[in-house]
Length: 488
Image: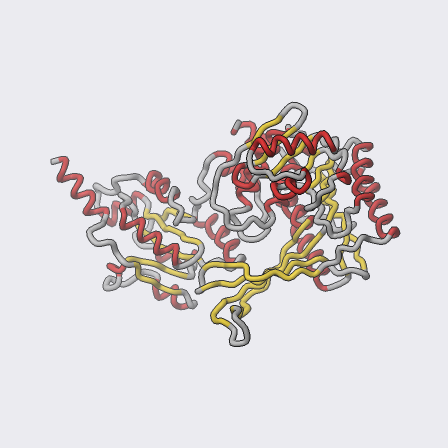
């Protein structure tokens, strides 16, 4: 299976995907929640950063571009600052916005999220404000949209309809687009809105409702795989849909076609933020099916990309390299410093607090576990600088390490408290610290009198240096001595 997935993902090419739907601007306003307002029992947010990203159908377009496709956007924005920002972000992502129409009678749909940073550490969404119009378009505006659709359909490899029920994909226009795509022998895949009536999606090639959307559409709750199987059969038969993919969170996705009727499981993982997961699934299905991939393989890959996406904050894209690492089992935690810096830049863009520590971690014991738990409490992302085998020998002597750097790396990578590991050869981590520039540097209390390497540098730009409490009597050296005495 893995060979097939790897072959598929490395041969996706650059298909042209016609993305039709509700284009939105996501706005993230970050700030420190330092105190409670004297005016009301609500936190006061001191704004530190504002970021913009593509939402809705725009998120699908950005995801497609990151996977190597050419997304052609068809939808509307308002003639306002949010519309200008959205267009700029789509262009930067690599999408074609030539056919994104500007309307003067409605605002650009935007979602503003207030993100509080509690005690300089964990991000938490406090509130969301939406600006939108859900009114249907005028007959003249629908006519323009449909004409552009007809013009672009011939050169498109596949069509994506992303419906957030914001007025663009009315029942009539949706049915016409699906019918035109079928006449042109083009696959059309749909991410439906939360509605009880799926009649406007009749005849689509594939539909991707989540658990909640499916429950509303079929009239019963989706709790088990059997429920999903029953619901998929109802949707496929009632609305003449070739393939139904019901996304089921950590359980994976239920796939029904004429030949397949089964749950496609996914690997359980920690979820950081589900925003944009459905967009990522739709984009993956679009590019894989455009590359003539079979349905089961397409769903397996969408499980992978959706799983990677929920590990990130906000609606985030996923790269081919990340998918390959997931398929091959190469840990996404272990990086050379050059690659690590790029990963950390993305986390910093999301206002994450970077924590750094270093050590040999030769024979991992309870002291190490408690130490790394302490590190995790200091911020969002924990980076461990691991001394290489040659570095350990220089520090500890020729009979160390007991476990080589690959084994030590594998053990650390298995810990939830560790986000990234990078191996370094120098006897001390100063050069590594200067490259990473952590927000927090953590060492054990036993370093208080020795002098903490990198402390002066970290504090020079406002970073913190924190000493972690030790677990008495626990150390690798003590453990090794005890084992050797038992051997004698």
